[in-house]
Length: 518
Image (cartoon, rainbow, N blue to C red; front, side, top):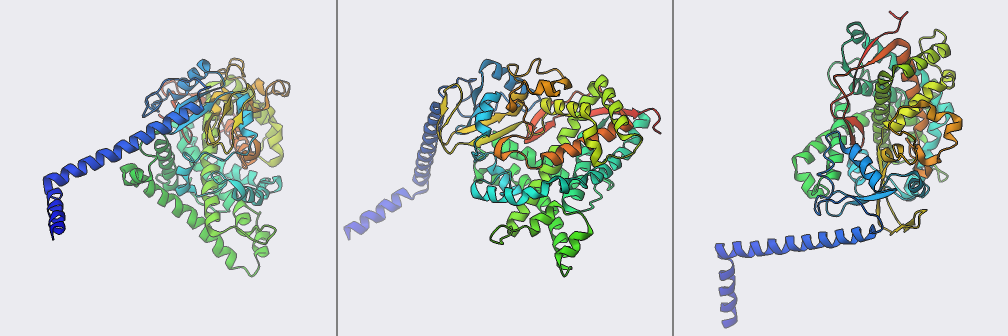
C-alpha cells in the first residue's frame, strides 16, 4: 500500500505542468547535446583522415558554405584555393560532409581509373527524382544496366539521329529570325533547353513533343531547373541532408512538386510507347517501321537469363536520360555559342569551314560531322573552360594512395573539381585563355590523358558522350551558317554550379544574319 502511494505521489509530482516542462527541457538539452557530441566526433574523425592535406579554414558547423555563396564567385575561389593547395584540399559542407577535393589530372587519373561508386550524399539526393539509373547506381546493378544499354549508343543507332537533331535545331533557328532582324539581346539557355529537349524526345524516345512551338514556359524544363537548384541547395546547406528536416521544409515541398511534374512527363512517354508496342502482334513489325531508339532497347532488351529491365528500372533510366540528354547538352551548347560571340575571329574561321563542308546544304548529315575539325577544336576548348558538369563525387570502398604517396582511408568522400582540373595552370599553359589550337593532335599528345575530361573517364564515363558531341556539332554548325553571334557587353554571365553549369543572370547574346542569308 505504501509503495502504491509512493508511486502515486511521484507521478503526480513530475507530471505537474511546471515540472513536466522542466523535464522536457532537460530531455531536449540532453538529446541535442548527444547529437552535437556525435557531430563533433564524426567531424574530427573525418578531418583526421585528411590530415595529410592542408586546406582553407572553414566554419566548424557550416564548413565552407558561407565562403562559396553561389553569387558567381565560387569558381574563382576554388581556383584560388587550388593554387594555394596543390593537387587536393578538403572542402566541408556541413559538420560531417567533408570531401577531399581534387583539381589535378594526376590525382584525377587515380580516382577515375577505379570503379569506386558515386558518393552516398549528393547523388542520393537525386534518387527520388531520377531513381537508381546509370548515373546513381553501383555494383552489379550498374554493371548489368550499362551492358544492356550500351548497344543503344552504337554508331548505327546514332547515325539517323543527326537528321532529327538538325530538324530540332532548324525550328530554334527559325524562331531566332525576330532577334536577327532587330539585333535585340536574348537569353540563350531557355531556348537551347527547349531545342535539346525536343531533340532527345525525337531521337531517344521517337516522341514529337512540339515543345519548341508551344506557347508559354515548358513545365518539364521549369521543373528540371527547380530540381537542380534544390538538390544542390540540399547538398550544400546544413541541416538539409536530414530527410525529415528537408521533407518538412518549404524547399522540400517545392522539390516534391517539381518531381511530380518531371515524373508525369516521363511516365506519359513510357505509357504511349507501351501502348504502341502492345497494339502490334509482334514487336518486330513496329521496330522495322522506324529507327531503333533508346526506349526500344529499354523495353525490349534482355540479358543471358532472358531477364529484361523492371518497370522501376525503365522509369529510372528514362528519367536519367531525359534529364542528362537535354540539360547537360543545353549547357554545353549555350556556353559554346557564348564563346563564339566573344571570339569573332574564331567564329569566322568556323563559319568558313562549315560553309565549305556543307556546300550550300541547309542541314547537317552524318558524313559532315567529320569535316569540321577547327569547329570541333573550338567546341572542345569551350567544354574545357565551361564544361556542363563541373564536379563529380565518389565514396571509397577501400583505401586509395595517390602518386605522391599520400593516402586516404576507406569511406572517404572525394570531390572532383573537373573545372579546377581544366583550369589548372600546372597542366594548361595560360588556362583562362580561349585557344582552340590546344586540341591539335600534336598538342593533345603532349598532355596527360586526364587533363581534359568533360564527359568523365574510366569505367564510369558518360555513356552518351558521342550523342552529345554529335548534337553539339550539328547545332553549332547550323547556327554559325545562318547567324553572326555578337557579344552583349551589358550582360556578363555569372557561372554557378547547380549540378550542371548555369549562369546566375542568364547567357545573353545578339545575332544578325550572315550575308547571303535572308
